[in-house]
Length: 159
Length: 159
Image (cartoon, rainbow over all chains, first blue to last red; front, top):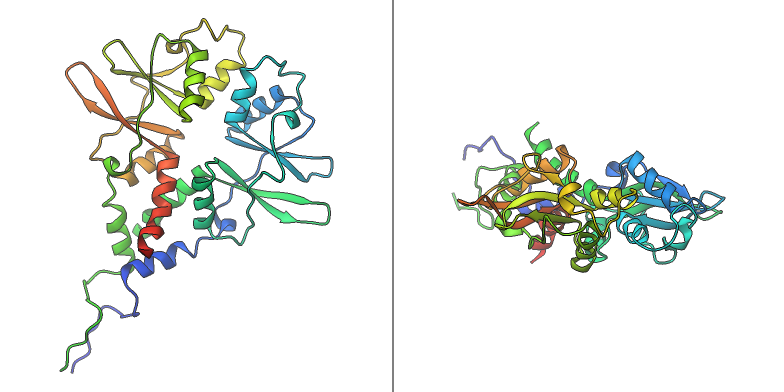
């Protein structure tokens, strides 16, 4: 029989190909630059940094530049309507701290981190590297990251 | 020749199937419930509502319940570090107002709204219905919505 040309049967269905494509997305290919503040800065300065850098999540580090906490817009909004003086209170008083922080690593699958964002109801997750001193923050994954990846699923397709 | 069984050739490639799948996602199938406040409520009350309802975006309506503005966590955080009395200032002073609001409708494609969230750098978009009185808010699409849709691309696949 004359061979049909024009397509190649890979033995995979459309949805298997879709799953395969999404599972090829790694954290390191999509992460953004992390914005960090020292745990001693004031809540006011952290809010200023958040506006200046236009991010929704700040990572808090100690003197050794290792991760000790996270600040979301929600954390800062909660603090700002409190009675404390924002210029005096340091961020380590109001931050979410280790070990209550969800972290990820550069080789993790983006889809797994998207799942964590939804299941843990958080806005951003730090990408970390384990070092002798502690956790070094090397990137960030947020719902914006995932929304961009979703948009790219089709954008790349039309190249 | 004996027909091959076990798969069906649709004439489409994997990425065409992916594009088709994503383009079948409509706003109405993914939208969340919109949380609205009246334009006369105080900034403090709006912040309280945001925490109570645990949302990142509030929609502001007038006496006819029609959309007049939007409040993001960022808007409220900016206001909260200002010098104004949050209990006195009404939200219509600080909100982003029409016509500077990006809206969508229930029949829009989710992928197009995801694109708007990224390109306009906003967190949430109201789903509206055009009425004689003005724009009625019927839902909301946020980066959380899109992150959930991204996760479902594979979750549905494994059913």
